[in-house]
Length: 151
Image (cartoon, rainbow, N blue to C red):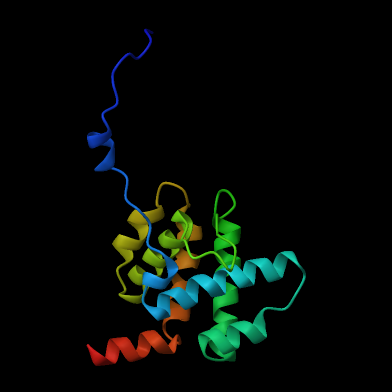
């Protein structure tokens, strides 16, 4: 096979590259989920209990427990390590945004959209568990409950 000798034009590349949002530009409910994810993973690596932080940040014991169950399901099903930023980082990572998109689909009960996001990398059984755990989390996450009632 011959060597590729085409030119890459920056104008063509720019339409495919999309900047990820900063944490501060996200709705507060979504920013809390990302920071909670970061703290929970960091706490687990340091053998610390993240429950007090999660309870305060997410709104109670039940929502914190469901969030930790969700993180466990993702960790077991994901084919490689989920890439997250440090807790203090203002930038979001692609995997963090994917998880938010998955959560939004699960919250809206859009199973086809949820499956389309991860069907090539996670088997149906893993997708079923993650979807169920995301629905369970979304059903008790108060900021979303308030949003859904108001509009």
